[in-house]
Image (cartoon, rainbow, N blue to C red; front, top):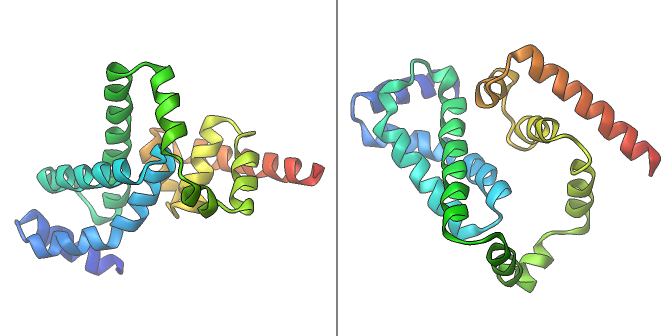
Amino acid sequence: MIEEELKRNLQKAQNGDQEAFGAIYDHFADKIYRFIYFRVSNKEVAEDILSDTFVKAWQKINQINSAAALSAWIYQIAKNNIIDYYRLKKDLVSLDEVEEILEVEISPIDTMEVNLQQKKILKVLDQLSEDQRQVIAYRFFEDLSIEEIAYVMSKTQGAVRVLQHRAIARLKEILGKK
């Protein structure tokens, strides 16, 4: 979806046009789903959070001022829903129970889907700081701009650039050792 089309759909959605909001959903849903799934590792939970994210986006669509900020705004809603999910889960079950559930929920098919290359990437990414991992994930897995990442992470664009630079340098260092 080009910028002008996104802008038109946002304006229409803000005037109550459900089809225009559907076009916005179609444009962002896959990326937002991957973003959520990467953090919750459960298909059904990711689908529920995705649904809730777009319900909230529809309810608050008039809060967004520009099409340029739309992507980061939807990611922020998704991020807040993920935080709420973990808060609720923390209040309902102990960590021991969560570990047992996670072990049981991993099926052989799910295990097969994560290929060797993905495991290597995740292992390398685990050696970065949390902020560096987030920047790398947002920038290269979710294809967000520096401006969008800064908004989602509540950091300046300069801070995001520094985090990205340091993360890439650290990844080169780690991969150079292997």
